[in-house]
Image (cartoon, rainbow, N blue to C red):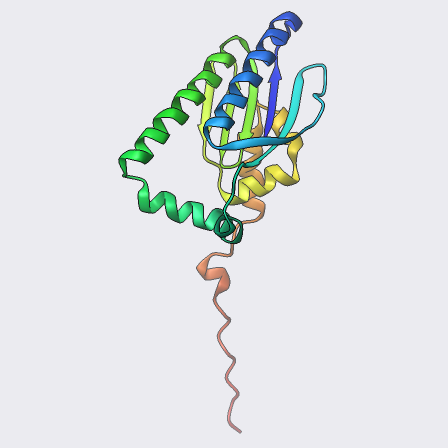
Length: 178
């Protein structure tokens, strides 16, 4: 997970970083995650990295990883218990958004969630697996709220799979009979 905040007012950002970090920690807790490593924040603006993991994974969770989680989510997504979990997570995430109210620019990335605030615009996006990999490879993108979405789109275009026409094999050449 990465958190990036930027604001020209140093005092305002000092207050905001405490509120945002508190809200993000609560949000991770609601998702059943625990922070296992914290990098020191980079000063100037504020950029901090946290590493979180599931607190009590079962043996099956470890073996199946995100594939199991994705399947479970699709199988039980309409269940009342899932709706309650979704509600709690949404409330925790709302606290993160409230904490960002006093910040000019921010990027929060956690797994398959990307939140970008730039001026009065806020984008909540579920990045593709390619986007997630690009963010892992290029974490500096999270310090660019004004361009991160476009940069992710540009990186994705560089790695586009071939179209059907590009994949088609050339016609075999016929040999002329003598």
